[in-house]
Length: 301
Ligand SMILES: Nc1ncnc2c1ncn2[C@@H]1O[C@H](COP(=O)(O)OP(=O)(O)OP(=O)(O)O)[C@@H](O)[C@H]1O
Ligand SMILES: [Mg+2]
Image 1 (cartoon, rainbow, N blue to C red):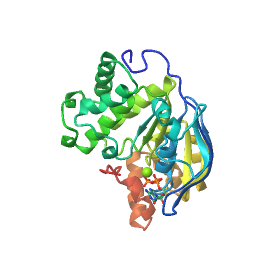
Image 2: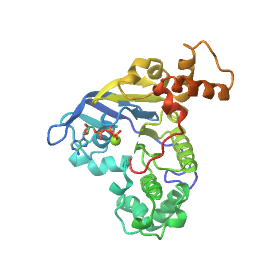
Image 3: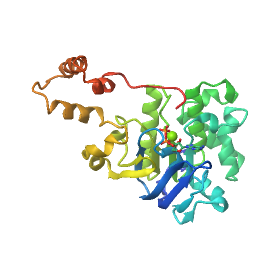
Image 4: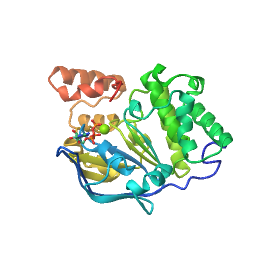
């Protein structure tokens, strides 16, 4: 990490505050309503909830791509707004849900260099950051490639490299692991965990309930633009009723405990649990199908 954009030292993570924040899209869709939340320096927070719950909208407000219809959003003591867009961009790195919305330079190298160049850094420092970020995200071999000649997952990695190269104090990621292969996903999560342990604030929208308990400390659950629950992961997941209206299930292991605590047969091995689940699905418990199936890995979200 010595050559990283933050140097070898700890990272001074930003604090993010939503104060009575609401947002209505032109056309009248209310996507967010009365959000009051503080995400502290060094937190690793997962933003979760059903499709259309308001996750992407909340993250876009945080980085000033959208502006609140009511209330405000601040990063440290800077209110996010038209006048402070560049100031916020220097503090907060934002990874779009779709990398096609993020990448616009002709080549991979130019795209990763764009952010650090805009920070006014010198050529040697920009080069050093591009190299570190490209290696860290596994796209060093692609540096000379045109963006349009990349796969979707490769684009996602390049987009992340560009964000890291800025050396942000908070990282805001909209479903970063969707469409990454399993090795890339594991590497990404390890990287985020390492940076978070050095102090970086990490805010990540995700549907992956099995992955998130391994990394996030806190969770914000959005339902219809409202905060349905917020707090330490264990507390939010302990209250199962929170999850229902958000189209979430418990993490796989907790879900299994939940299912079998009501059953007369208690499986003693993973194999037995699987057989028992198959039997229950055959008897009509179709709600159990998702935990039997391997995890979905889609393309564009
Ligand atoms: N550009 C837009 N114009 C109008 N309405 C929008 C626009 N983008 C999103 N919405 C609406 O705002 C609400 C919140 O959408 P948002 O994209 O924030 O949800 P999300 O939680 O990120 O969903 P997903 O899990 O599908 O990514 C939805 O009702 C959506 O239809
Ligand atoms: Mg979204």
